[in-house]
Amino acid sequence: MNTPPAGSTATALLAGDVLRNTPIHSPLRLLKGLYYAASLLNFRRTLKASRMRKHNIRVVDETGAAMN
Image (tube, rainbow, N blue to C red; front, side):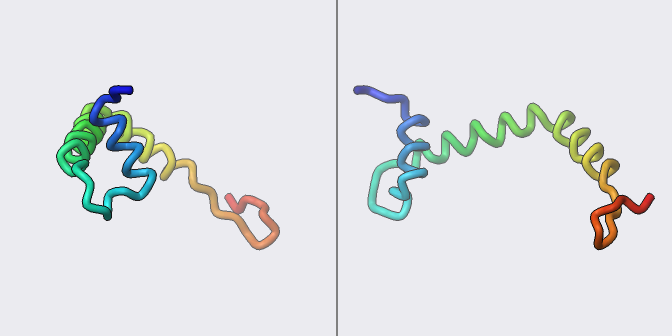
């Protein structure tokens, strides 16, 4: 079976083969690059969600009741 480099890299990463002497470091850089590119493309949505989570934090006392 011929798998794409990013797919086999993710499998090797999950299997713990990164610390061994395997030739996956170049595809790993590709996978990381794709991850960071997707993160940058979703930056506005991520920032908005982070602000909403910060806004939705409630203070709770020892019994679990909200103190607002």
